[in-house]
Each structure stands twice: as structure tokens, then as C-alpha cells.
Length: 465
Picture 1 (cartoon, rainbow, N blue to C red):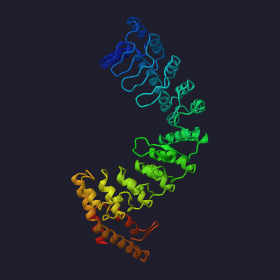
Picture 2 (cartoon, rainbow, N blue to C red):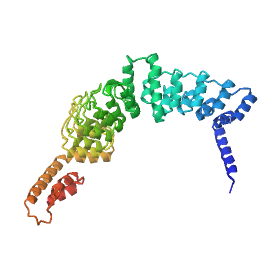
Picture 3 (cartoon, helix red, strand yellow):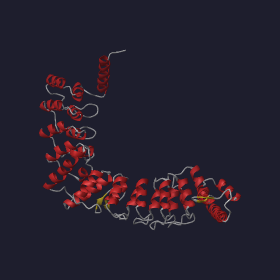
């Protein structure tokens, strides 16, 4: 068995060879490993040439040292002429970006003191301050703010609570330090800026910032311009509850509801928080809102209801069932196109069969036509509406064709079960199938009967009864 020292040497050699294959020079390797003496020797022997060369991944030696937190190496590279503001090839990050994003406070201080640009953005329009805020690197946040880095709404809203005792200091520095010198462009007032930051914090699920902003007098029920991330929803005025619902953050939703925000407030598109959560398939948030009293049949400015969103999007069948149980109208129609919930379910690429079956069981009308005179069956079979497989189309088609007969059987089943329930009530106590604490045994079978998915089983049971 090899000695531990020889194993470490072997591993180091393999790592060096691997990095060499990726375009690392000896200077890149020594800088990334933090070997200050080797870095100095290489810089002296090369007379500083190649200091700003990129390795295969598009980073310089200074960027690698900054990312790994090797302040002594970074200092030597700067002393030998390394470009402090040079940007990486792929993501256009500077050494300060790498240090800030990785929480390397000592390197960040060094770079700022040596004149690093604290305002430059990378390819995704993120500054070093924003990267450190998102990562919860509060010491770096304090360093950059005190050095004059500009604060944007994202910086406030995405500030993570890396260390509890340091969070409030960083938060106050961000708000009370930089913002006193003037607001970023596009904001009418400090209140407008903080209201926008609140929405960003709510969308990202940053409860500590939401709570901290509430202590600064920000209106938890106020509105600001909002454009959901990763969504094609048109920007408009919205509340923090809309943002939290879009983001799917139940803890933030609960905090806002505890502070008596409007549960059915509408945004610029007339969408309620419930519609926002349904459109993104956040089942837990939707359940919380409904339990707190949100209107299950709310509609947006086109007349599209929450149930229509559930049927048209990739929402689960559980979402549609949840809305139906809280009173959503199964036959509501969008007045812009006249399409019903069932129309939307037939064009849905996911869960089509299960959704259509559920809606029909809850009384959806399969004969309704949209503003162009098309039925749900037309939407199912016409290729311009859907790209379902032949098997899926056939299964859903059978559900639509058999809907009238199936409804008749279900109604008959209800009548049979209710009659049997009444009959059992009159039977004497010695009956073997008598009462339970919850009620008559067969009375509970009605719910089971409605849940039967196999039509053959349904008909057999009802026929027997």
C-alpha cells in the first residue's frame, strides 16, 4: 500500500496534467494553487510576460487567484503589471467579480485599493456588489458599498443572510450609505426604490430582506413596476404577494398574509396572486392562498380564470382539482377567444387525458364552442391547436364522445347511493352493515364511486347496486 505522501504527490501530478490539457500555463497553475514563491519565480524569469494570458477557460492568473482567495499571489501579479480590470472571455467577469462572488474579502479589499472598477458589469449585467449580495458574502458587501459601489434594487432584494449578526449591518450600509448620495436612474423617490426592492426580495424568497424592509416603513401591500423573471407576462404594477406567488415562496406568502395584505389584489394584467401561483404550478402556495380566502374563480383582463390557467399550462392535475374543490367554475370561458377550460385542457401538452377526465367528472360541457365555433373535440383533433400523439388523441376523444353516457351513469350512481343511504337509516340496530361514528358506511361509498376511473368497474358496481 502506497504511503499517503506518495498518493498526494500522484494526485497533484494528475491534476497538473489535467489542467495543462485545459490550456493552463505554469503561472496559471501556481496562481490557482496559491504557491506565491513559484508565482514570483515565474514572473521574474519571464520578466512579467504572459501575466494577462488566458487559460483554456478564458481566465487570467489574477482571476484564478482572486477566485481562490490567494491575496499574496494576487498582490504579486499586480506588482508585475497584471491588468486589474481585464475581463474573462466567456462571462466577461473581472478579478473583482470572481473575488466578490466567492466571498474572498481580503482579495476584494486588495483589488479595490489598487483601483479595480467597482461599477463594471459582467455579461449578465451583474456587478461585483450584486454577486456578493446574492452569495450572502456580507463582508464583501460592506467593503464594496463603503468604497462607493452603486446599489440597485436587485442588490437590496437579493441580499442573502450569510451571517445573522452581520446581515443587518450590511443591509443598513446598503440602504443608508450609498442611497444617501442619490438614487439610481428611473426611480422617483427612495420609497419607490425600496418598494421595487421589496418585490424582488419577495420573488426570490428572501424573507429576511422582506422583514427588514417592513421595519424601514416599506408598505408590504404597496405596488411597483414588476416583470416576473423567466416569464413572458407583460410588466405592470404588482404587489409583493404577486411576486412571492410567482416565485412560489410559501414562507414569504404566509408572512405577507399575516400582515393583512390584500389577498385578491390585481396587478397590471388584472391577475390575482392566486392566478400567478397557478400559472407557475406552485401547488403549495395556491393551497395557502385558497385556504386564506382567495377567490378561486378570479379572472385576468382577458377573462381567463385560474382554472383556465391550470388547464392550459403545465400545471398538475392536482392543481385543477384543488381549484375545483374551492369552487372554481368548471365552465368559465375566456371572453377574448371564447374558449372554455375544457378547450384549454384539450390543447395542453401535459396531462391531457387526466385533465379532460377530471373536468368532465366535475361537469364540464364538451359541446361548448369558442368564438370561432370550434368545440373541445375540434381543438383536440386539429393539428394547428395541438401536437398530441395518436394514442393520446384517441383516449381523449373517447372521453369526449362517451361524456353524456358517463354522466348518466354517474348520476344514476349518486341516486342509488343516496337511496341506499336513506334505506340504511331505517334499518334496525342489529344490521351487519349498520352505522359508524362517521355516518352510514355506504354513504361514504358515493365519493369512492365518483373517483372510480375504470368505466367498466363503475358500471358493474352501479348495476349491482
